[in-house]
Image 1 (cartoon, rainbow, N blue to C red):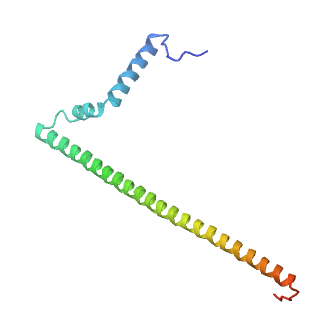
Image 2: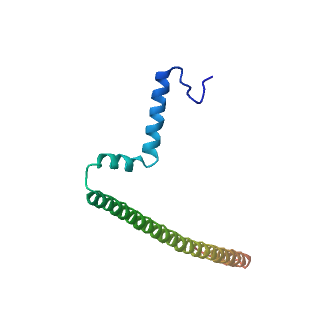
Length: 128
């Protein structure tokens, strides 16, 4: 049975495991900002602030686009549900009309059978 937590068996394995954990936490927990600051350490503060402002603006624009896309998708879903509702209502009306016509047809057929029976009873020939 394998262990679910890898246990290092030597100092070298412990070093690489520790390095992997540090890198994963740095990049996974917003370490990109730290890397950006390290790379920009020789730039003037105003230029760094401008770069950060442009980055923030880019993130805001992408969030705005994502929000507009979500709103558009929501509107599309709402229109589809509305169209589906209208279609279901039209379908129900057609079923009601079909049932009404079937009942009417049954009544006419019953009347026709009665009329044929009466004609046959009085020995009157009926040609269809």
